[in-house]
Image (cartoon, each protein chain N blue to C red):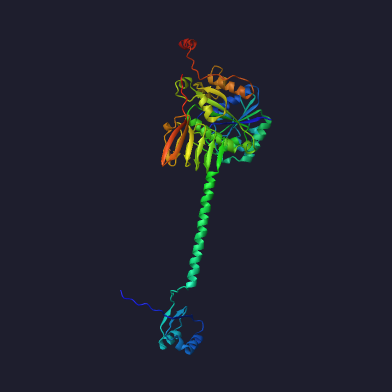
Length: 270
Length: 209
């Protein structure tokens, strides 16, 4: 029996889908069976970031409507045999989701996989509520800026009131990933510090991901950045994925800029 | 202005049977000849002619102003009095209930008030956690919040106790409290003689570094 994790943010464009793809692959690289499900009905992107866009035959709506089985709709990753993908519908909209159908799908996926990672849509509408409803845990992605923090705060509030687990008197585990941290800007005081974000949201920190220009290129090519061993964001995602799999990985302080003598020296030879 | 006031005797009736009416008036003519006859409802031609021939003054379908007896007036006045006593009692009870609801109603919360949440507190509020940006608290009574406020507070009580909250939106009795007046570690905001007075309870810690 696996665990269902919803990846949420409230605000759009903070890197939810990128994080879902990378964490899914990272978990798979840790030898766990993982399925990533795109719940952004009507605006699917996860297929592109995973490089599986031309493999999609059946989507999640067809599975929930009973037009296709889960087995038929699951797409195996090209890069890792532990990773599977379930696409969102591009033509329908969020209103097609229904609680009991979502529950049936999620329960079925839980039987087969160690990790079921749901990529939530931006916003806090019905599509978001259905994504978090049957999740055991949530990973909240934020950028170190005030609007992202406030939207995440609102999303957490809804998670705490609408989740199935909370309604049954249990707690939904919540973890925070701070994405796109620019060490220089934090040092100059132009970007929110991690401690301040944690104070505002009061959620456990799962990891920090530094700003990395390679992420966009990796997404465009359909190769998640975690595959690039040299990428700082990729390394960060791998550390986070390992923590998800129960490994003890120390937090790396990425907020301290690399301005030491050796890094300056290596900067000359770049 | 010259005016006269008369009391007029009125005989008011409704005609169902023309024969009966005529025979009644024939026998009682002397009694009713000085009355004003008021016919309500239908007035048949034959009766109209009969009234004219007999030279009786009459009105057809006329809404008469009817006086009330002294007794009726008195009982009406008494009823009004009782009603006003009852409504006064009800009003007093309502005021009492409201004040007790405000007085003996303390809400103690240790929830983090996240963005989008709106708390409406009837009495006093003791909050032991943060109020995040985008959250609103409306309190009719006093407010004490022990952690930082970044959302909106509407307080209508006698006082508020707040920590330094540079990002909060605080309205006390409809007046916005400036954030830089709440610079100390713990501040008391109170209403005295229609004036908002802010006093530090715990001073700002001096940072020696």
